[in-house]
Image (cartoon, rainbow, N blue to C red; front, side, top):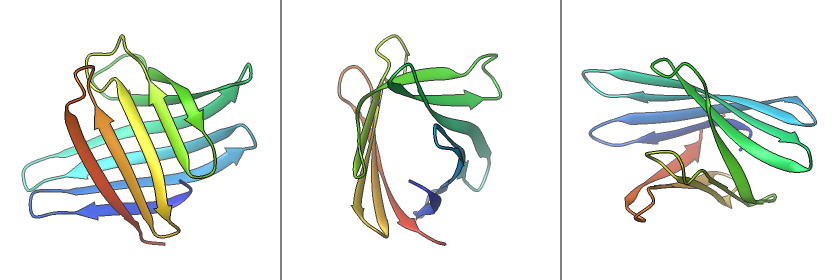
Length: 120
């Protein structure tokens, strides 16, 4: 996940930029840009108490939303929070050194995919 990732379509550009803060923490910024708007979120991966958590913070929420890792290894990371409205799961899959697929799903399994390409 480390590095800058980008997905460009005719409707929007989605970027995630991740860097290592420590052995237990990665920080990132997610940005979605359309012709009419920009949505930015602060992201963090934190290992604590022998578990890994994905934290997403957007401006309209006073607190970050936490997702607990069900799987987290060098190629796959799946994070779940069934109490959250949407999404309830985030599934990151490193398809190659240059391609990252993110599946964003709700409790009903519906959602969307983002196919990222590494740009740095």
